[in-house]
Amino acid sequence: MHLATLARHTLSRGATPAATYALLARLGHQPFPCAEAVCLALDIPPAETARRLADCYDALLADPRPNSEVDTGELLEALGVFDVPKDLTATERAVVAHFLTAIDAMGGIRPGHHHGLQRWFTTGNLTTAYLSLVAARPMPRTGDPARYWATLVTAGELLATTLPSDRRITYALTHCRTRATRP
Image (cartoon, rainbow, N blue to C red; front, side):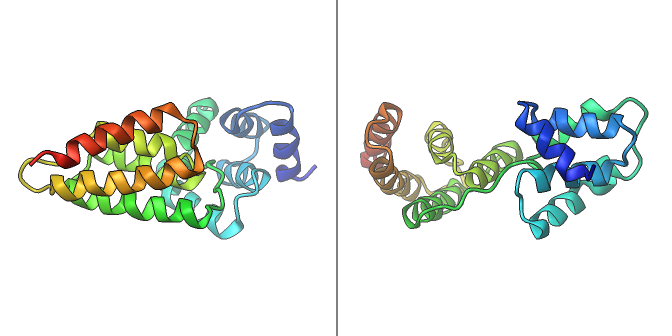
């Protein structure tokens, strides 16, 4: 059985991408083909699969430690290697563009927060991305608070048109409006 077919079958039975990777690796297959098979089974485009795996090849896939299949699968999942890209609508792309402007207006962002935002943009989880940006603040010396909060107001208004009944968005948007009116 082809590895991608086995990965697709395993995923269809409810296994996570990390567990699917671990199963393939425990069956004696090399790490790179296992990770590639999981990505292909998730319908991640081949070019994107190659890019993602190249980014983590040296650290995770080149020289596997014995009995590290589960850990490696979980790391690959945490890094976003198995994130399935969502085709964003024009409105969602506009929201992401506003998020990027807000990130610039922050004047700096923690690497972990940046990584999370990139994953949420890829998977289309824009509500979580918005809420995380609303919970953050611009840097005191390098940020532009007026632009940050105004941009998040605009992004929230657009996001609210795609999720009109989400109270979290409504509450966060009210918070951003309040912050945007402060000098």
